[in-house]
Structures are given as structure tokens and as C-alpha cells.
Image (cartoon, rainbow, N blue to C red; front, top):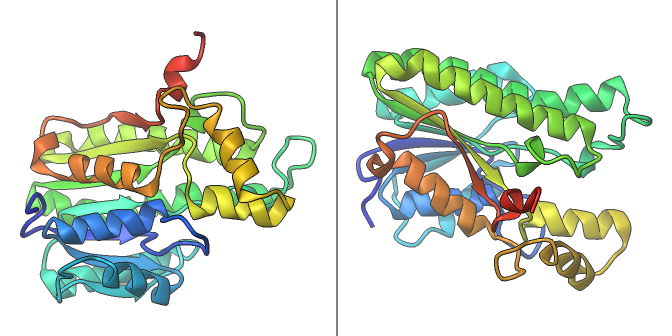
Length: 269
């Protein structure tokens, strides 16, 4: 239970949207705290981020929640400044913010400038700017880990969500570039590619938009997962993030790790 003991982690997207299932960001926040990290839990909804911290068992009193809007780069910079003021170092930056179907129509025929720009501002630009602000800190430390939560949709071609898919593909490309530009400083950067997950964002959002039942949506998604025909959970993503953040992954950088129950392997099967 001490895999991140003594480390300072920033989780951007530490809260979650409303729903029954735990989200990736909340689960990751909880796991980081449980493993000994002091966590700056960042979210547009600071109360949701604080709730994530309160759900961690034996919560570290040093962990705090802070409000920031990833569409406003200055607020990300201020959040990172707050972490430095409090702890004097940053060991892990975990970017988990994303918007998908809630952003609006994203088929090419219906896509608008506003929808494309908003999706990419939240999913991609926020990750890039957050990394920009921690880079000089981690370079000075000559250590650090950046983890970006992308999606298997960056690789597979089934999704009609043009803005979402391109933003996640861009995130992988940026993660690889950041990894290579910072390897000499001992900084690692990796992406996580969740597949069909049973999270509030993936399931509850679709319930509200389509009027379909939870059971129907979950069953349809599960049928597409090779491993046990069951979707993943926020805890699956959180455990992958924990591994990548820990010293156990000290020789791993520039990778895109699918957490998808074999969905990408199934392509071409």
C-alpha cells in the first residue's frame, strides 16, 4: 500500500459526472491516495474532487482539492503553482479530463467549428498545457511522470465521433513527443487507452441522451468486449495509472497502454 509513498501527484479530472459507477478520475485519485501519494485533486467541480478524496480510506490529510477549468490554461497554471507552493515538487501529472457525446453532434456531416474546438480544448489542449507547466519543474527535478488518459477510439475506426477521436489520437502523438523530448531528464510519459468502460460518463450520459435503460446500454457494450464479455471499470484504469506512476514502470515511457479487455486485439480477428 506504499507504491507512491512520498510522491506528489496532480490528478486533473479528479471528480466525475453524476452516475452510479465510479469514474476513471475518481478511482485514480482514490488509488493514488491509498498508495501513499499526496494528491492535488483538480476538477471544475471542486466539491466532486473533494468527495473523491473523502472516499479514500485512511485519506492523507495533506491531500487537497482545488478548482480549475481546463478550457482556461491560466487556471491549470495556477493549480500547478499551488502544488509547488504546498509541496515544492511534482512527481506525477495525471490528465483524465474528457468530453465525448455530451459535446454535441460529431459526425462529419453535422460537425461544427464550436463543437470541434470545444472537444479539442478539453481533451487535448488541456493535456498539452498542463504538461507544458510541469515540464520545467520535472526537468529541474530530473524526474517525473506524465500520464494522459486517451481512448482506444484513437486507434479503432468504429466511432463516428470525429472530434473525440482526433483529440485522443492527438493526445497519443503528444504523449510520445513529450516522452522523447524529456527522456534525458528522467521524465516518463505514457498514455492509457480505455476501452468500453462501465463508468458514469460512458453509461449514465448515454442513458440521459438516448432514453435507453442502463441494462440495455451495458449489455450492448459488454457484447463487444472479448474478455469475459464484460466492460471495464474506473478501477481498471486507476490500477493501470498506479502502475505507470510507480517506480515499477521506471523503464517504460512513450507507450499507449490499452485497458480494453482485448478489444483492440480483436481488430482484424
